[in-house]
Image 1 (tube, rainbow, N blue to C red):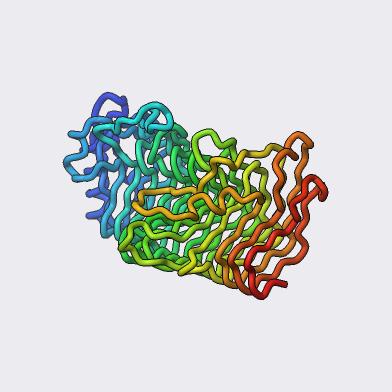
Image 2 (image 1 turned 30 degrees about the vertical axis):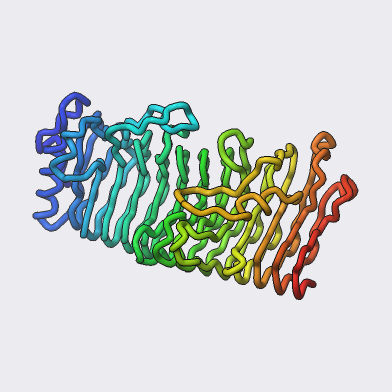
Length: 435
């Protein structure tokens, strides 16, 4: 056990304790590993580099504050408070607090379009193995909170992240081209995507399990993409609650790889009103980011036991050149106790691009609570749309609308009340092999 106060840390929130904490980490590492202990107090620090076999433990009553001075990050040449590269057997644990000091609003949606001159993230681990992040509370990250880049063997459990929801890019947890990641029992409130899987380089993001998490954001709660330079595969989300969020579950395929073998089960989604963002409880889209981008694939995707409260419908669309393959939606319940206007609705873009096509608006504006297009191998079973208030019957909408698809199996689709408008409960257009 290496107590940072034994290395000169003051804990008064005035002194920069970075040098003392870093010395404790290096001493622990050189001795063969162990725990660097942060006792109760307020510790201001610039960037700290974790080394192999070192655990950083925050005692209850301890707060580690990210310095807002860019000079305090030049030693490690990173703008992250806690950083590790090419390390193994590292952890950040305890019941203390890490405070990123990113409390101000940022983003054109919130009336602050000018980008801050300097921003910090809380944790960045690059090319590391055997990582544990447990128990800590992270407040007001200035940018991405937990960024894992090309890491393997990651366990994140019981972590609370509470960021300013009006601060753009303050993502929660970003596994980026990572393998063997377990995220459980976390509560995330973020000003950008909560749990987002990415591949910003041509390396896969695979073997990911997320369970028992509560998520809230002004963007997407659960997201795959938009950066999709490497494949996504063997990914499983279960037992999660999404609330007050525009996009509950989103697939954004833009860069020409493959997303496959992804499952969602026992997920509760509550959408917010469409004030700043397009609203979709479930959204899935394939497009080319640029004209010279490759066309990607989405296949072998399952949604089961999904409970939705929303005024906007599901949108899932492949491309004519690349239909989504083998999609299953089973036991989906959607309660409509308000109704959003689709007149200006368009698909969620979710990132930069230079291309557009008719699918930006064509299917997003269809009169349906679940619109699916360009699917090859579709199963919809036990979809129930419950419209609860007569005041919202002014929009004539089907429960399910399916376009340009093949090998379609539909069973037990309900809209209650049944006779609220002239549109059929199920509306099929150019669907081959439908049963």
